[in-house]
Amino acid sequence: MRILVTNDDGIDAPGLHAVATALATEGYEITIAAPRGECSGSGSSLGTLEHGAEIAYTERRFEHLPGVQALSFDAPPAFAVFAACAGVFGPPPDLVVSGINPGPNTGRMILNSSTVAAALTASTLGVRGLAVSCGFPPEHRFDTAGRIAVSAAQWMLAHSAHRAVLNVNVPDLDISEVKGVRMAPLAPRGLLGLTFDKTPDTVRLLRFANTERLGTGTDSALVRDGYVSISAISAVAANSEGSGVAAHVEACLPFPVAAES
Image 1: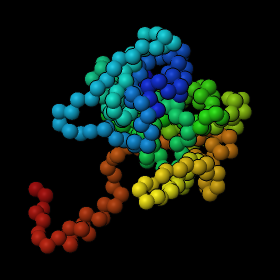
Image 2 (image 1 turned 60 degrees about the vertical axis):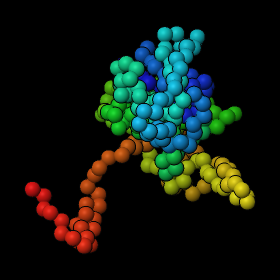
Image 3 (image 1 turned 60 degrees about the horizontal axis):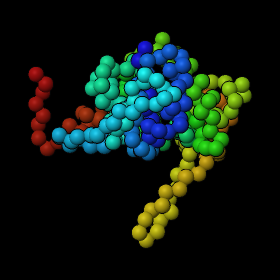
């Protein structure tokens, strides 16, 4: 099975190498495609959509990952995943693993997470996606998150549908101290909170740790309490919700609408 590993912290980030090493040790065929540097918070941005734009990439080699193709892009992770899943650098992967992110990706703010967006981008191209996060340094536990990532990847490759996406958040504990693994809805607030400080010339972004008003049984609350949270999420897809709005809006048009033939 072919697994593409990416992240939003750059190709040299320790979290990426922790999960790539854990997966390679299990015998998976690993390819790395990641941004050249820090791209956190870029969401699903591709960087550019200009016709004829040329996106630079560099081939890298890492001694601790012999035989692993590694590509560094001058672009956000969603672009790297898009190019790899489109078959630009060989057969598309069977699974994209994004992470390990140093910092939780829980709650509705995952909309802005480029770690999660990389996994969602894979799903739009028919490839399973797995996003994995733990806590911030120095308490972060890439070792525990790596073991959880391998187990989740094994399950996805054996059982999940194509286009499935899982967002996994791991508490910063020894594996023996993890209380359990739970499927969870997204919390109203993430474990990572953001606030702003306005000056005459700038808006300064500040982050803080959320531990309150996280709901019951949500992804944020579970990780806070020592559980691994797994949330099944979806990329952009059409559905029937709000189907009545079409007729309502059409009734407001000042001209007749031709019936479908």
